[in-house]
Length: 87
Image (cartoon, rainbow, N blue to C red; front, side, top):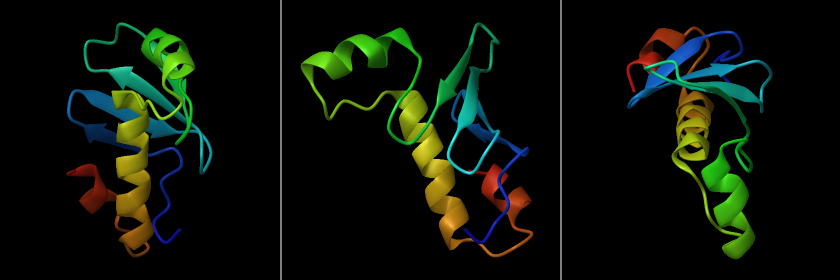
């Protein structure tokens, strides 16, 4: 990964994505209701936990936000964290 995304907050729509490791992030709604632990393939939100049992391909908006930051970081150069933040 070219850009260092760990410990850098990213605003994605109405969520803040904060990576604690290269593949694990805390996702917080802007109203700060709850902090979720999210990876590119799983999330602690109740929507994902219940709907993914019925549809294994289901991805909640928190997973999509994490994937969006990871995809942008994959194509960004070192030091591009501020550019990624303007998703």
